[in-house]
Image 1: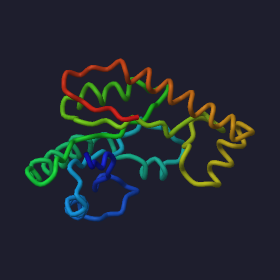
Image 2: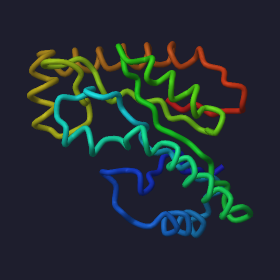
Image 3: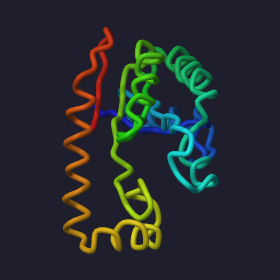
Image 4: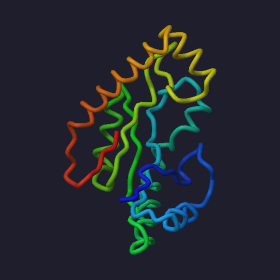
Length: 179
């Protein structure tokens, strides 16, 4: 199956701003059969110490239900053209797993796909983005661990923890979880 499993929407504050229809029409033209709308889930308050970065990474919790309705509307509008699935990209948030649990329990029944990601590992002065900008990485992660090998080891430790944690969930619907 030709499937785009991770795409953004207008609820992404670091995306392109291109209309959702343009993405879907392009996917159809390229022969995709399935297209998952999988926006970044909200983050807990004060997860990051940079408020401007925080705002660019994820929608506010208050917009999550609006996003779900947006995705469901496109799913309905494209029936017979392409299988649009309602998804969400959740982050592994050690120390704030209750926040992620709340999202799963509040919205899991409406989701068809979850992308479960590791974007954060411990670094200088708390949790730091692993995939932001080179200078940020060097200063907040590489300097903290000392070598790239240690960074990679820690990242894969977090991947393994994330897999163990998300594997415990069964929310009653057929749900694809991609890690």
